[in-house]
Length: 196
Image (cartoon, rainbow, N blue to C red):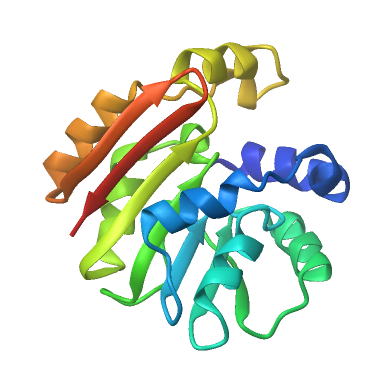
């Protein structure tokens, strides 16, 4: 993400949690992805933690959840909403993550991927921090066409952010050396899952 993106999302932070509805299906998605007790999970582009809370409910106190985002105000708001010592809030850039190699059992990127300026390097970094046999999931609750239409109606810089078709992300995942497990795209779900 760019500095313009950081500023855009920081400005939205105080109202973001109220605008973004929670959905019970989020927990189902995480269960399908295999998040379980004791896992160490990185939530990339976590914002105010819409998915973070559900991850923690599955990993429990034996696990660790790291909520990562470039927008520090989003993270501050998330920490205020979810004051939990087992959730770490880390302001970081996905194309140069400040974590050691092979740190996480799972990496989730929910509703953030179109905002990454360099998607190939973002995927490469997510792969780097995954443990051997760890899993990655790029997830949206909309098709790329619908999401791109929605973004085009927003303000700069987000109006230029585009999500590639799921098959294209799967191709990039192959290029960086992950093994695709499930690729699905329809009106209500965009799911690209891979294993290291």
